[in-house]
Image (cartoon, rainbow, N blue to C red; front, side, top):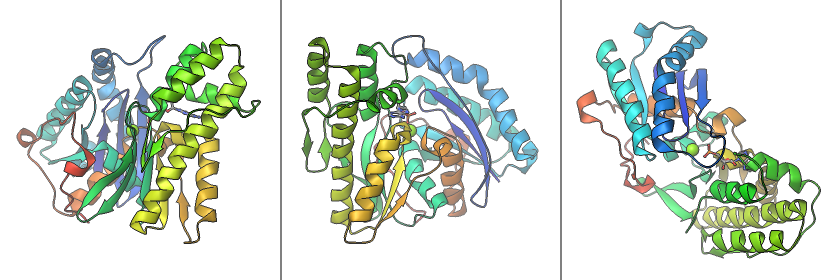
Length: 324
Ligand code: AMP
Ligand code: MG
């Protein structure tokens, strides 16, 4: 019985997993009226809600605290104040319960939760607010095959949305407006398996000021940005010879991105499985932390609280993978 805690950015979550089964998955997201995340405010949000969310996760899983065998914590990467709040809460709990702590890399958890959908050795297209990476396992580590060279695809979409006068998060609004748009050519920027979005952002801003409709721009943004992501993911599949694609991150909630990934998998000559976790496992969540933590714990990974620290800038390929 593993209790997982997610705290890396805007979401605080707690979840219970037992033998790969998700027994509960509770979360709450820090939101702003306007503008982006203020790290200290998000940390305050986590701090004030942590006890309540923790309790809800236990209640929904129908277990008592003493059944917890370890606490898995997302200690990397992310916003330092948020990570610290999560770490302090987890340390307090493991000391009280006398159980070990399992530090989990958030990006790797997005990939590992693919196993819950049946993946064995997938390529992950991780498309979230701050992160945009193509990750897969190779030679003892989870490697980043491609990534954004400037801003994350979600942050890019949110910036465009802000210019259009939509609130945060902007993704769902852009998706709605895209339904009635038509295609306009936008800068398509991919180098190998790396992508960039700032050129497209500038172009959209110029066209918007010239009076091109939000509908057309939203549609064209989706077609262009997502085609870049799908191209990079396909190249990673071809390069690694892997035959499973897993989606992760909030932007992966977009139906058009899902559809394009599905088509790509279907059209590949090498039969490729398309695996898209349900929404509650795509966005930042504690179930993926508990799920990954359980796999790590079962392989013998357990730490004393004093030996665990936050790693705000840990890269996916810095993690020593000993549990596969
Ligand atoms: P995450 O960082 O993984 O929690 O994801 C948050 C990001 O996902 C934000 O930038 C949202 O705008 C974006 N997002 C959420 N829903 C959608 C959607 N339907 N289409 C595109 N982006 C979305
Ligand atoms: Mg995430």
